[in-house]
Image (tube, rainbow, N blue to C red):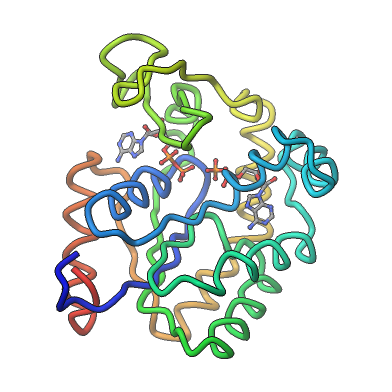
Length: 224
Ligand code: ADP
Ligand code: ADP
């Protein structure tokens, strides 16, 4: 990020497997906009055995959503001290979106854009079946579309990659249904605010990255 550029504040919206985490990591690495992934934060709580993790685990394992009260409390702590961020996987319900609006108004940190990553159900299933994740930092690879140099090993830190326990076909089907029922209403919610940018998530990773860049440039020079 150049010193003259303004901090970017984005929401990444879209179904599981659409590429939100992949693009959020890219923005973080290249432009210093901190990725805040509620999924990664929750998995860390589960791994650490915290009270919050114990409460969240059952919902995550079954492909449902963790209750809004838990998620909103967790995000309030995250957002208080950040000027630039990409929210990856939050909000996921209208209740969370309303709470986010209130938080950001209080902090005087308005969003610049909400980027919607769209892809067909068939492609989401393929991507999630091939997803391998670095549990230490949330970076993902894909056996079909973006393989690591050595199978099951992260190119960057040399440590093991794992398949997430909720990336099994049965839980994935449930997560996609959960998205349709509880999260897709946010598309209309944000379309009404004028913040929504639709991106073709079916394109290759670097082409989606170029579209994200273009969308940022087009939105009143915010950021990059
Ligand atoms: P999300 O965060 O939206 O659930 P991810 O970024 O984790 O999605 O991507 C899901 C899987 O698809 C990962 O294995 C990732 O490597 C792969 N992937 C991400 N974007 C693309 C793309 N544009 N084309 C092909 N594969 C992709
Ligand atoms: P993906 O990247 O595949 O979309 P995530 O890693 O974002 O999946 O989320 C994994 C799980 O964590 C979800 O299935 C859900 O149980 C829980 N979760 C993550 N973010 C939220 C949220 N904002 N609200 C409720 N539950 C969430």
